[in-house]
Amino acid sequence: MNYFIDIFHNSINKYGEQLCGDTVEIIRTKDSVIAVLSDGLGSGVKANILATLTAKIAVTMLKEGASIKDTVDTIVNTLPECNVRKLAYSTFTMIKIDNNGEVYIAEYDNPPIFIYRNGRDYPLTKRKLDINGKTILESNFKLQVGDNISVVSDGAVHAGVGAFLNLGWQWDNINDYLRDLSKVEKTSRDISGNFIGVCNNLYGDHAGDDTTIMNIRVRDIESIDLFTGPPEDKSMDKWVINKITNNTSKKIICGGTTANIASRELNREIFVDIETMTKDIPPIAYMDGFDLVTEGVLTLKQALEIIRNYAKEDFISNNAYYLNNDDGASKLANLLVNECTHINFWVGKAVNPAHQNPNFPTSLNIKLKIVQELVNELESVGKQVTVTYI
Image (cartoon, rainbow, N blue to C red; front, side):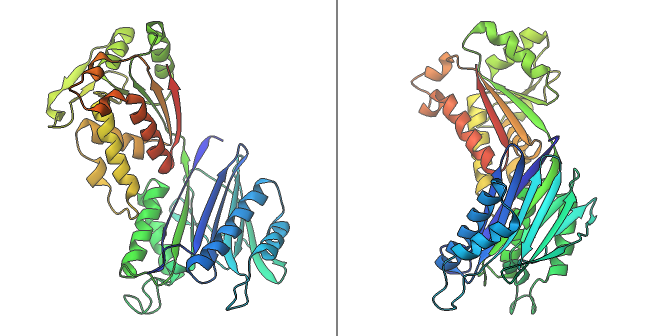
């Protein structure tokens, strides 16, 4: 697969409910990506159970190669019946994307799917399939880089009913908004966060229904190699520098000792930019062939906090507050969040004597812990991350 399937989803619960009645399940296998959004009947615990069972069954059976008929049959025969309505009901949209770019979509009673290509609506030819009295809409198409697919639950269509919008946000209006959003936002997280924030505003922070968006964006693979900390064995210095410089990726160095290794092995000068220094964050530096050179643990720790705050935000309208400052930590966080799909950490395991100073905060003694926390946060916002310890 020479592109990256960028998937993210956001939800808001019906006001007063602890559990969301919508569920999203995503599975990545070596052959495909499978994503399901399900909306259970009603709200609260019962709806959550219905939606969760539907989504879990669907992704598991599709992963194992089951047909849509067998999958729907299993869902119908498995869902518990509501004692009040005497129904076992959950809507769903299932999407399976093969590595060759072939997409299969099955829709049942969710709002129609939104697909954009080159900033325009991409129409689908849908086939009706009757399974146990349920009408499933099937469709297929071939992906291209830049395509954007959005799936919403009916809470989005109802947003604003009786408040800001008499008839709700309606499908056509949502389509216009998502189409424009897909032109200006690069990541699925920003698209879904922006959209769910608008829904929340239309509901006046008191959502009348569970509301969910699942967004899929097809992106070129963009990689970053981040090298921090000297290798445990000095003979590995040349090896790791060669590995990084031979990749067609953006390149980051975090750490003065690490930068000196690259400078020595590549015979390139380091230029420190004092003007980028702040009270809490050391200055950045410049070296030919590298997109960013920063200090080590202090900058990594601050970048972790910026990314952690960014990851906590359910509603994304403008991430400049987090990511667009000129200090080293903000620049590092922006590169890791907005400028890549894949991140390769190259982490030297040599002990830096400075970090063992008993007068330094304890957190400076655990560089590996900071890296692992960074990995966790980056994966939570949809990045593919690998770590190589040296």
